Amino acid sequence: MSVAGMLKNHTLAQAISDSNFGEIRRQIEYKARLYSCCVVIIDRWYPSSQTCSVCNWRDGDQTLADRTFVCGQCGLALDRDVNAARNILAEAFRTSASSAGSHASGECSSGTAIGQCETTLGERGTNHLCGLSAQV
Image (cartoon, rainbow, N blue to C red; front, side, top):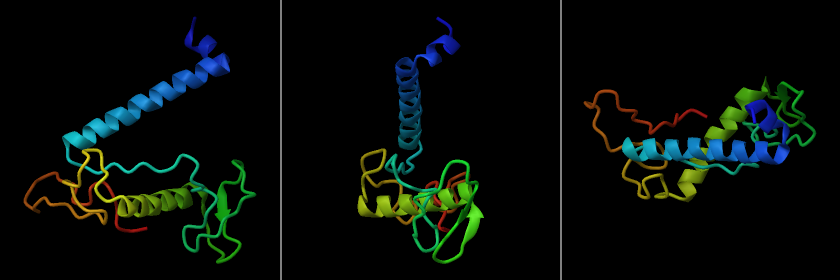
């Protein structure tokens, strides 16, 4: 059976999709352990594109066709994907702060929840923010 034929079967397509994303996550967690980085898992149903990244107002009527997020409370108008990225980053900081120590390596040897690493500035090629930006 061809890949196109397999993807027409919804149950089989879902199984393939799940296994591929599971493999991607496994690889990311493996690399994080290898390079002593932090991995933060965010709830799959977190409404990142429906929530204002400034005041946390939520627009439950937003659809996939809406490409600009406009806040009904503070008036923020921003590209939907940029707004979602800001919310995901903020949620990653909140999640890692509330579960400090639960990183891919099982311990917080790579840094703290606020993105400070234990590495020295002299180590070339080291990401001193553990993959996270302090700007939200």
